[in-house]
Each structure stands twice: as C-alpha cells, then as structure tokens.
Length: 184
Image 1 (tube, helix red, strand yellow):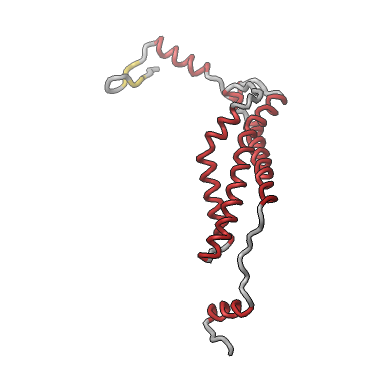
Image 2 (image 1 turned 180 degrees about the vertical axis):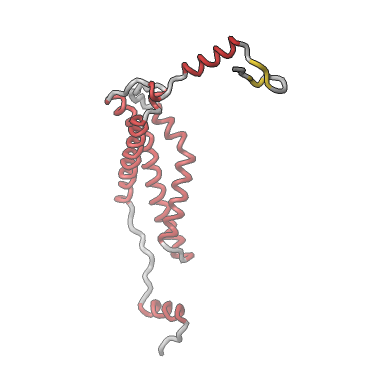
C-alpha cells in the first residue's frame, strides 16, 4: 500500500515507512469520546454549575435591558410615533440581544474570575453526551435564574401608561379608519 503526503513544494510525495508509522500512531493516540473515562456525578454537577454561572449574568443583562428599553420606547416613541407595544418590545429585544453580544466576553471573564471549582474534564470527556446534557441544563437553569433576578427591576419601575383617548376622540379615530363622516 502506498501512502502519499502533500509536501512543502508542489505536489505529493511518498511517505517513508517511519513517517507513515508515526502518523498512524498519532491518529491512534487521539482519544475518542467513547474511550474517555466515565464521568462521576460530582463532575457532572460541577460542569453544569460552571456552564450555568455565566448564563446568570446573561439572563440579568438581557432581562433588564429588554424590559427597560422596551418600556421606555413604548411610553416615549409609542405615543409620539404611534408604534405598538409589540414593536417596542421587539426593539427592546434587539437592544438586549446586542448588549448580550457586546458584553458577553466581559460576563464570561467575570465568571471565570469567581474561582469556581473545576470539574476537571478532559477534552474527550467534554464530548460525552452526558457532559453535553449537563452543560445544556446548567446554561438553561442559569439563564432562567438570571431572567428571574433581572425581573426584580420591574418591581421598582413605575407603570407609564399611554394616554387613553376620550370617547369623542375614539369615535373620531374609528370614523377615520372606516372613512365615514362623523354624526353631528
């Protein structure tokens, strides 16, 4: 069997027997997830915790920015430009997602400096299905906790309501929509 390898020059060259042997042994030494040592319950808990802590920060930032920006846009631009509350909420979501991307590295850096205990997982162990599930559940519960924490800011927000048109103004709006003359 002949083995070829791309050389630094143009084209392929034949591997020596020693090069072929070292390449084959390097491929064999790369551990696969199926050969990774089994995870302990404690490792899975720590891995979920490590994955979840940064997501608490994301949830807090996301919730506070979305609710505060959306509410402000609804009460200011909603009245001025006549946009719906759902449009204001979508703009708040746009802003909160943008903040998540902009501050994501900072949130992760702060979480990394907390000195959380390490699960001590190897690369192949991180690829195991149970490790992936633990990380996903940790992130899910972390962001949910963050959103609940961020929602506390709503307790301190005064409700800004849109002005409600009087009956006469309401009839005028309805008539304008249906293009019928107002009764006199």
